[in-house]
Structure formats: structure tokens, C-alpha cells
Amino acid sequence: MSELFRLTKTSLYFGNTPVIHEANLTIKNGGITCIIGPSGAGKSTLLRSLNRMNDLIADFHHKGTIMYNNRDIYDKGLRLEGLRREVGLVFQKPCLFPGSIHDNVIFGIRHIREKKKEGFKVIAERTLKAVGLWDEVHNRLDSPAIGLSEGQAQRLAIARALAVGPKTLLLDEPTSSLDHRSARAIETLVKELGRTMTIVIVTHKLEQAKALADDVVFICEGKICEAGEAANIFSHPENIETRCYIEGSPPLDPTLPYPE
Amino acid sequence: MRVRVKDICFFSLCLMAAATAISLLFIIIGYILWHGAPAINFAFLTEGSRDFGAAGGVFYQTTGTVLLMFTAGLIALPIALGTVLFSHVYLGPSYKKTTDLFIYALNGVPTIIFGLLGYIIIGEGLHLGVSWVTGSIILAVMILPSMAVSIDEALSAMPHKYRDAALVLGLGRWHLIRTLLLPRSLPGVLTGLFLGLARAAGETAAIMFTATAFSGVGLPRGISEPVATLQTHILVLAGEATNPRALTNAWGAALILVTLVLALSLTAMFIRRQVRMEAEI
Image 1 (cartoon, helix red, strand yellow):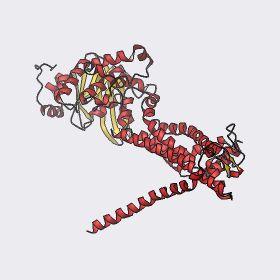
Image 2 (cartoon, helix red, strand yellow; image 1 turned 90 degrees about the horizontal axis):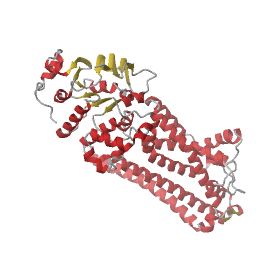
Image 3 (tube, rainbow over the protein chains, first blue to last red; image 1 turned 90 degrees about the vertical axis):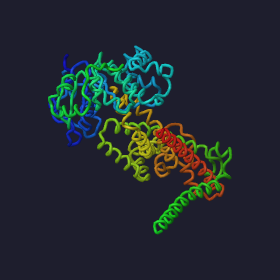
Image 4 (cartoon, chains in turn purple, orange; image 1 turned 60 degrees about the horizontal axis):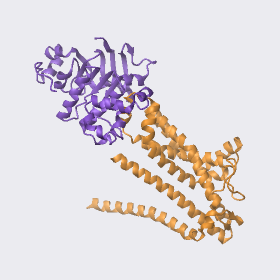
């Protein structure tokens, strides 16, 4: 598989504090890459830097390069809006806009002329079906989105991101605030999406990473300790910190099927 | 025990302060109502003034005040909205603070200075003279800060997560403004507009030099003509009239002006309350 992101000596700072220190990392095109590590390791900061969402934070700055499709994402000629449409991001907590479910799904595409031709209703239906929400909401698309449960809201947030048509989807701990059943629904969805697009997901749930990941990036205290194929890292971690972190959780049992 | 005594003393002082403020408002309104009500009738509201205010009504003055007020609002609103949106969307936090400082500083300039500068720069410099347009521009500059502050409050109250959720979808700044910030700032815009209009309606010093004439003025035929206003009408009648009937008419004009200002302020308060209620949901 070709590489999608390449980080070279990338350091990410909030003020003078480095959150990620001189990271060298390649993320492959296609499949699911899980970023794991203890709390405060810099997982979310790293994820948000891939589509420059950290730039919205006042004292954020970076060093080194972040390449996406062989292009520096800080290149002056690069359109930031275009990057964010190609590299979507779903936050830890779903943030729905005031308005109906339908309005929320098409929020990011209302102004795109080409999408208008296809028809917003068609796109809304397609993306809601993709996230498995269509059957639950198809008869109340004009109802306020605020009435949805947390799990439904997160799936709606994913549908909203998918409606824009990204090639890559970044997910920042998408199940951390959900109950077990809702979390399972999101995991199934992520697994499904990972077959057709590149997914980079941050999680602190090791079991989730084991179930989803094709590749794993382990971060500890702002440094990338280990990155590579999930099966290798979970079975034979080379780095001592990775090993300690993984052994703190139940070992991977590859014979167990992924729960549908 | 000593703490309890302090509590009671502090409560009593606060109560007295609040009672003074509220009773002052009621005394002023009551006094104006007492003296002005006898002047109010249909003819007073629909006729122009005659005999230096001793006869006729205040139709031209009321219309002039409303014209000035709304023109000032029309000029100030896009500038205030543009300033706030610019500082929110395009400027960093430190630059935004500087913009805010300028807006607050503008709010503190005495109104007579606005009048004087308006007369010199717009009236004399641009040869627009004492006119509807000169007065409107000066009033617009005066009400600009209160409008900007109100819009800024509405936008600042919006959680950052909405902005992030919009930008992460690849929305550009213009689309962010159109789809999220403008709809969200609408209540703030309306509150600011009504507060600004109320302030414009009550202003006298700034328009004395720039917009109004006391006698010989009907409805303006164009923006370069002076307008009659309730404020100037009251000022001149109260200061110079010797006819008791003219004084009663001055109180009548004051009653109309106070009613206008109160209606605008109450509308602004109502909208603000609605916004707070929505924000709490």
C-alpha cells in the first residue's frame, strides 16, 4: 500500500510546551490505523494535526513537515478547506448543530454546487444508511437532531463527515462517551468504513484497537515508541514501553471473531 | 453574630440603592406623564407645530427623530456586524482584544465631541451642512460601539465546538460566517440594533450641530435637508418658551420621546432574554 501521511521530525507545541516531539511516522493509504497510548500522550494532538485542526488553537505551532499525498499540508498553495474536505475528522463528543437531522447531515455540503446537483436528500439517505442510522431516523429527518441519543448523535456526526466525501476519516476516541452497545455499533461501522477508505482512529481502549486495527501507532509521552502492523505489535512488541502498555491489558486472541 | 450584622447592613445598603434607582425611574416617568399627558391628543400626534411650539403638534419632530434614528441604525449595523465578524473570524485573539479596546474607547467619547467633529468634518469639510445625512452619520458612529458589543457578546457566547465542527467539514470562512455565525448572531444584532436606536433617539448634543433645525422645518425632501427632532424641540421650548401652552407641549413631546426610547429598550431586553433562554437549553 502507498503512504498517505508522512511526518518527518514533526514537533507539535502549545505555547512552549512540546506535546509531540520529533515524530517520524508513515500512515498507509487504506485500512485502519489505530493511535494508542496512555492518557496525555499526545494522541489527539497528533490526530488533529493531520488536517490542521490544531491551527484553531491560539498558541499552537509546529516544526518539521507533515506530508499528505506527497504534499506538505502547510504548503502556502494548499487550500486548507480542500484538505479538511479530503481528511475528515470526528470529535470525541458529537457536536450537533441546532436544526434538524437532515440539516445536520448536509451542513458541510450545502454550499457545494456539485453536491446540489446530486441532491441533498439522496446524499443524506446514502450517508445515514452508511452509518446504520437510516432505519432509526428516516421518518423524522426534519425533527431536531438534539433529540438523538449520544450513540445516534455520534453516528450522525460521522454521517455528516462522510457526506462531504472525504478520502480519509480521522476519529478521535469516537466511543469514549458511549455505552457498550452504542460503542459496538460505532466499532462495526468503523470496521466497515475501513474497507473503502483510510481510517485513523485514536483510542485508549486496547481491546478496540485490537479488534479494529490493521496498523498501530503507539505513543508515549509525546514520542512515537512503535508503529507497524497491528498483529506484530500486539504479539511481539519491540519497545519496552509498548510491551508494558499492552501487557497491562488482556492479550490479543486472534482466534476470536469480530463481534457483528 | 458580627457576620450576621454585616450581612444585614450590606443587604440594607443594596436594597436602598436598588430602591433609589427604581424610584428615580418611576419619578421621572411619572413626572413626564403628569405634565405631558394633557398635551397628548390626535392632533398633537398628527400636526406640525405652529406659533413656536405653542400650537399644533409634533408630527414633523417625531418623524424626524424616527428618520434619523433608523438611518443611523442602517449605517451603523453593517459596520458593527462587519467589525465583529472580522475580529472573530479573521483576527487572532490578541488582535481581537485591540479591536475590542477601540470599540470600548469609542463608546466613552463624549457626545458633544461627536457633534463638534461631525459639524467640522462632515458638515463643513464634506459640505453636507446641517442635514439628515450628517446627523445620521454622527449618530451611527455613536451607536456603533453598543451594537458591536451586543453582537460580540452573542458570538462570544457561542461554544467553540460549533466553530470547530463547521471548519472540520471544510467550510471556508465566508461559509462559516453565512451558515453559522450570522444566524447565531442575529439575536445579538437585533438587541444591539434596538439598544442603538434607543440611544440615537435620546441623543441631543450630537445632532444639535449637525442635523436639526427648530423652526421652519417640515418633512425633509432629501437627505441633505435638516430635520426637526423631538429632542431639539423639547430643548428649545423648555429653554426659551414663555407661553405656558408651549411648555405643556414640550412635556408632551418628552412623553412621546420617553415612550419611544422605553419601547426600544424593552424590545432589546426582551430579545436578550430570549437569547439567554435559548443558550440555557
